[in-house]
Length: 104
Image 1: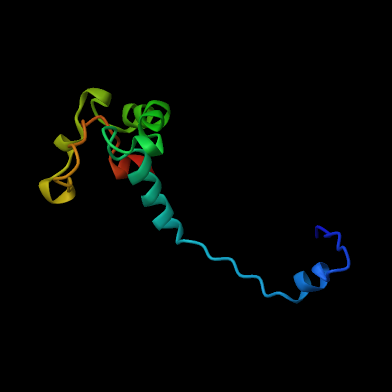
Image 2: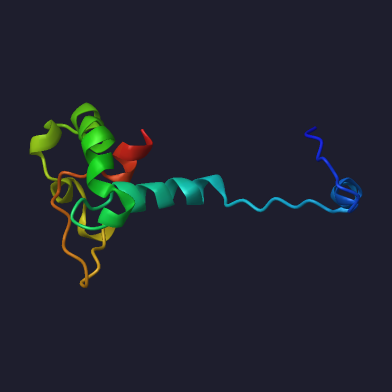
């Protein structure tokens, strides 16, 4: 345990008497959030570094797990009920990994 240096203010006692609480998100929620923020659409999410993550990870995921590799567009692999693109955002370019490819 890290010891705080108290300067006569009772910091150590306050730390010992305080109830500690850690709140975390569900692991699957975190996994989906990472995919959506970093890899789902290389045309959006530049504030999250989407293009960087696609270049570093997404391209390799697709080449490893997709039949036809990077030349096959993702929307050709998915049925219409398996994807949704928000009308207020540009449509993905199709080179991004699908969620199934991402979790493999």
